[in-house]
Image (tube, rainbow, N blue to C red; front, side):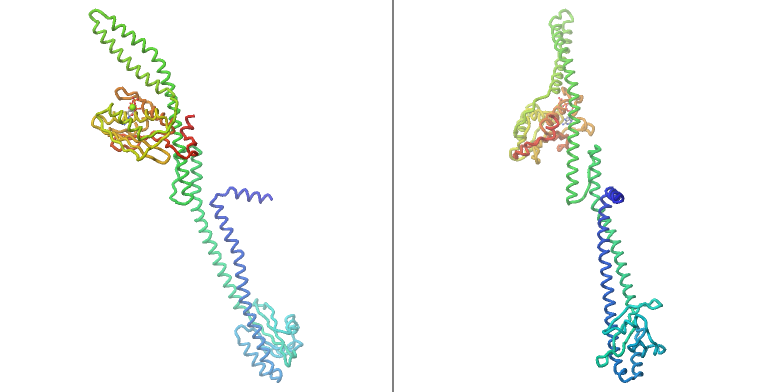
Length: 493
Ligand SMILES: Nc1ncnc2c1ncn2[C@@H]1O[C@H](COP(=O)(O)OP(=O)(O)OP(=O)(O)O)[C@@H](O)[C@H]1O
Ligand SMILES: [Mg+2]
């Protein structure tokens, strides 16, 4: 049983492609193993059967035609019959024996008078009906020996025998067998080639899928499977790519959240350290300014005012940092996004009247499920940045789009846009070069979007400047789907 286990082990280790090919080869070989011998057998028995029937007919005619000569003891007539038979191409001998085995007439004249006792002759003498037997001559030729009794007035008086060569039939059988075997081998080889190509075609996408899964398991989340197919395998590859996409997005969000957390810890610490020192500095400076007298009083008041202004600005920054470090409670509810963005734009119009605004809203109520305060903060932040980037005379476009289970809000502006480097870092807390900017707006906005189960991404701007897209979970009427948490909701738990 050891070798069986060995074979089984070997089979398990084979590649899918080799296994497929092996199965097809075994199947084709099994079909041939049954089919070819059956065809050869049928063909051989058909050829030999015809030859036998002809031989039996000939020997019967021979017996009949020898009767008149035998009755009349007309040996000349008998010789004529035998000779004409002997001229036939396949006939090797023809003879008439009496019932003791003595040769009355033979195609070979010298055999006349001889007495045969061999097994074949005994068999022929015993025959009461036409019989035959296969004989091989010393030269290796296959003969059929046909014998039939010569009946005179229903009495067995002699035996007629003919030896017919089967060389032609054997040759025909051999040729047919070789042709069938040749065709069989040819079919087998083409079958193997076909099986090889077919299995390769079938198993290659499966190999690609297996490699993809392996790459994913090793953390290569950017690995994608390129298959130009519309069948089940193609759908599987598509599903695989979608899954890899989702995994990559989830990982990116996780990284972003982790980074944000460390930034928040830093901001919390800094705000705490700086806040306590700022108030006494401001109060002291105000005191100095109030008490200053003498010739330098004006100068001191101005200097104190500069310090106080800077301290106020610093306090503002500290407040922003505290806000950034805060963990706001998330209370999702149904929000009509079209109404919400219209409301935000009207606020911004007042703050930045130098910019023109246009709205491109999805038809009908566009309902998302998210925390209203967080979403308002996100949209305001994006609009604020857009208006600041667009500057006087610039344009800001706000779009809402229903997209499957997501509600999308896009903000485009006609400003200078984002450099490729900036695209990679805009969502991280950075140093702002804007007057009064904290460099925290976008990172807070992304955190808020993720907390609501959505995200923000930089997209191609439609007004020549920057473009941002916020995605939020759409309100789902199906209770079952609504109960499923989004990946981000899982992440933030
Ligand atoms: N629409 C935009 N066009 C061009 N650059 C932009 C745009 N939005 C943001 N940026 C760039 O990204 C940086 C980060 O923006 P973010 O909103 O985080 O900070 P901020 O606007 O500088 O400060 P604040 O914290 O007050 O919002 C900006 O300083 C600006 O350089
Ligand atoms: Mg900003």
